[in-house]
Length: 513
Image 1 (cartoon, rainbow, N blue to C red):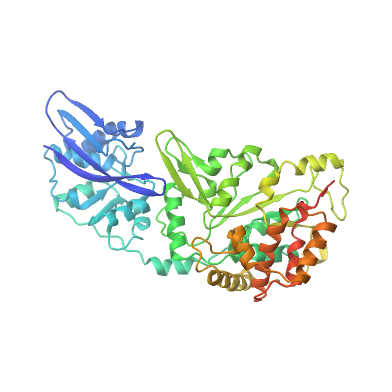
Image 2: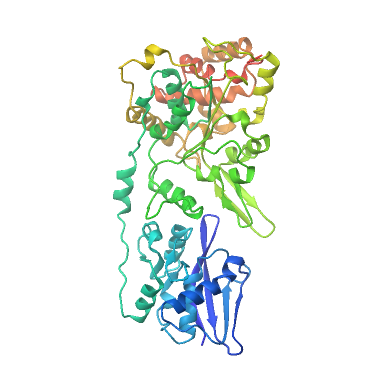
């Protein structure tokens, strides 16, 4: 007999419903899977046969044809094991197929019938609800993730025998219920680290506060041990909390990449991704035969931290340029083209020279000027053009390290950041896709960042005397607008411009020469 079930295929961060048809047309024994399956799907026959036998059911003795439609979409992975097994049992008359049409079923099988985790449970659940399915059956470890989608019954199962009993109506399954909002808001501020852990470095903390307030990219330049990494890791603690929409977007990406922890629900905190400098360009932006999200997409709505920036391969850094501007990345292959979101804040750190001690107040730099310049030139001008704040980090003195004085906590700084972001949201309410000052284009910049004649004179003098490049002009205006927002000022004052100017160290001609 012919049996139909429903599964799902994940492409990008969205899912497509797959119809799985199992037929027993008669003839010599054999399995035939059609519909563009990959190697993992083809191998499912051996796993499925063992799982069926080891749970007390008869293995099929005739010809089995399994079709996965739409046939022009590639089916990848082992998550189709469970629906295929159920389809075979129903096609051979061992279980009823009456209720199959009401459910989307996904899960990988081990040889004893245990159901193993899958990737992409959240987008699968979203698609199942959109197509009016009554419920979703997934591995138990993925159930909480899928249960974030309301108006859909989500059942978490550990063994194929539970699913068989459910469709035989000899046992019931209990839907998993997750109080998404309560868990989400409870976990938003549960950080193990805090800005108050950092002694001194008040100027760098101020720069990171400005970066967080306007969504600006920043680079920290300083000698080893000055605290660059420590400061960067604490940046998410002062960023505004994720909205439910942002959290859902972020969770979908991590779900597709298989990065969610077992039995987890929504990602409640902004991501912080810190790839090693040996990363490839494909691992950074995403890719593969069936494209998977890379580090820039995993950092969506959060922070991408590149430690020791000049040590990254030039090609790796250059592939970030377009995603940094467009806040999305398009991965194109011969048969598929997929968009992944990539709206992240870039925070980079680097030493000022190969030995690390250029401009150090106590240790002497052993690098020749040409070596310093060559080292700085590893980071291209077009990439620096997309980094708004250049912050010089100096070592912390012993008196500050040993001081018992407590500095501001992350919650104190975050309160100011949230207030500045609220001003920006009101300002850009009529402009779709723009939420913070860093996203302003040239046209908006001219309308919003109007400065007084005194400010114009100050900016011209700074560009002439400090030999600032032309590309620094727009960045200074954006940063000064953010500084004005932090000061609760409607206009950009000269002192706001003056502070913004000092954050353009690497634009000074001959810096490090």
